[in-house]
Length: 362
Image (cartoon, rainbow, N blue to C red; front, side, top):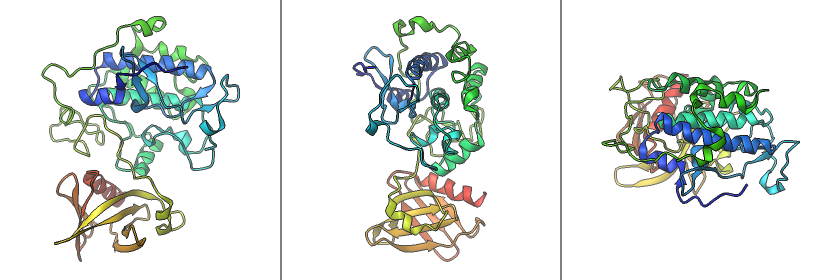
C-alpha cells in the first residue's frame, strides 16, 4: 500500500495547533484510521505503533498511516515482510511501539494480535478529543502502572458515545475489543459513535478543516483546567494539568536508557525517571545524570567518569524529602541536611516532583 504525498504533515501537528478536535472532526479521522486498519489487518499485518504522530494528512486532508517499522505479520499474512523490518522482539519483558499506547497484554509478554492496534486506536481517539493521552504520566514506569490498572478518567465533555467506544477499545481482553472479535470490523463500524459515517465512500468525503475556533485559545492555554490525573474538567478552575499544558504533546518519558546506567541498578531494580540535568551551585553548574528508581533510590551520577556523586537519603515522609518546583525547568530536592537545585532543559520539573511524590505515596 503506497503512501501518497503527505503535504499536510502529521495529524499530531495539526491537532497541536488547535488544542483538541471537535467530536465531528475526531469521528472523521478515527473512521479513516478504522478504514486503514481494516485493510492492514486483512493483509495479516499488525502495525503495532498507531498514534497521532504516525497518522499523516495528505494534501487533500485525508489520513494515511505511516511508519511500518514495527509491523508484525501473522502466520497467514498475505504480505512478506523483510527480516530487518520485523526483527524478533518476542523476548520476555520487551515491547515495540510507544509507551502510552502499549496494551496491557503486551506488557505481560503475550503474543501480538490485531487487538493491539485497536487498543492504540482507542488511545488515539481519546487524545484527539481531549488533547492528552489517557495514560499520560511522569515516566514510562508510571504509565505502565496506569495501563495495567486500566486507570482511565474521562473528561466531562466527552459524549456518552465517545466514552463507550473508547471504553470498549480499551478493554483489557483484546478479543472483546470491537474489530477483533468474531464480528470483525462490522462491530466497530456499527457503534453509535460512528453513526452517519459513509464507510463505502469515506475517502471521497470532504475532510474537516483543522483551524482554530473563532476566538479560540492558543494550544498553550487550551483546556488548561483539564487534569487527566483527577478526572476534573472545566468545572474546576483550580485544576491544572500536571505539566502545565493540556494540548497534545509527546509523552514525557524517560530518556533513552543507555546500558551504561545499568551498572547503578541492583538486580530487579528498574528506572522510573532518568534525565541529564544541571546541578546548580552558587557560582557553577555541572551536568549530572539524575536517576530515580523503584527501590526507591535517588542518585546523581557524573556522566563522564560514571561515578555516583550524590545519593539522596530516601524518605516517604515529605518533611524529610520534598520537591519544590520553581519553574518548568528548575526544581529543588530538599532533605533535612541539604537542598539541591537542578535544571532540566526538557522542562520536566513537575514530572520529577510528581514521580517522587508518587513513590512516597505508593
